Amino acid sequence: MFNNSKYTKCYFAIIEQAKKCPSNGYTERHHIIPKSLGGGNEKSNIVRLTARAHFICHKLLIRMVEGQSKYKMIEALAIFSNNKNRKLTLNSRDIAQIREANSQASSIRNKSNQYYLNRPPASDDLRSLRSENAKQSRWVNNGAVEKFTKDWNMFIQHHNFQLGRLPFDEDWIAKIISYPNKMSTPEANAKKSKALKGRPKTESHRRSLSVLKKQAAQVKINCTHCGKSVDFHNYNKWHGDNCSTVKSRVKVECEHCRTHATYANYRRWHGINCKVFKGS
Image (cartoon, rainbow, N blue to C red; front, side, top):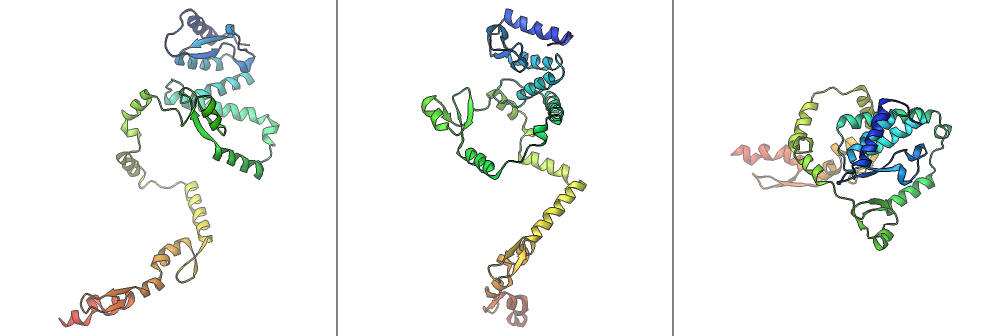
């Protein structure tokens, strides 16, 4: 099953060390022979590892097997980069390597999967059912495990769960706060805006903007004042609150002769053009 390489020797050395000297702190359950490769839940096949040792073992497993087994080990390793409850901090390089390897493995695996390539699109009934299930589901947790389920009421009544998700680890929060430039502060947003200002748009960005502009021009809106049907841009510019029929009904008082006139007549005969103002 496993090849005879330095990675295999290192893997079993970590396993033996964990069996001889178990950790007193936080540990995780690890299958020595993974279940996806035929391993079981026997005590002889399970060892308690620290979060760091657990991650290293899964990185070693990728280099210990070949073929379909390797794709399975890459997928298992990808779970580590998506689990916020695991007490393990990954650097950006590890996460990038994991995600890229998992993407390539999924692409290779799906090329030979005829069911995946020829799968029919989800029906409207199935889409509506998924949507309804998502609307009725809630996040619940018991302090250690969290679930997004439609049966949240049952978990609260019978399994001592409560509504809400698990809080983030305090060490993680402290680490994020210590780097304010990574947060969306006004200063950080202004810095990003300055860096992007004047940068030419890519061809794909220009095409997407052109498509959106054409789609907006096809949508017609009826003005509630004059009744004309115009596109979105013209509506904002010439209709709505800016419609000429509205402005013609608004009376403006001249500050010189105290006459109430429409907006158009005020600009023509009053204000700085008022006879009283000119006569004075």
